[in-house]
Length: 119
Picture (cartoon, rainbow, N blue to C red):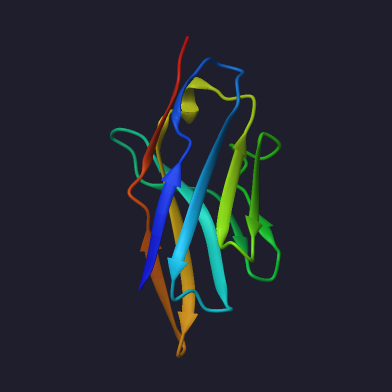
């Protein structure tokens, strides 16, 4: 089992910045992917950014150049720095960890943190 605790959401004006953090504990195996997803009202959950244990990162075009994901391998934390925020970034943001164990991928989710971009 993996437990995820998120922090850092809130209200910010357009053009502002926020940083989200997620602390993971439990059985996180060496092959893993840590990341963030978001879900706006009436929309499907979508990937915001992820980073694999290999060091690779992945961003959709909607956030590329504005968001940066980073991880601390020792502390098992993943951070999402969000700059130049737009109203369309408003959503509940979820931390996600995928970990490979005995040939099978397991998916774990945080409870979600609200990000609201509004003037």
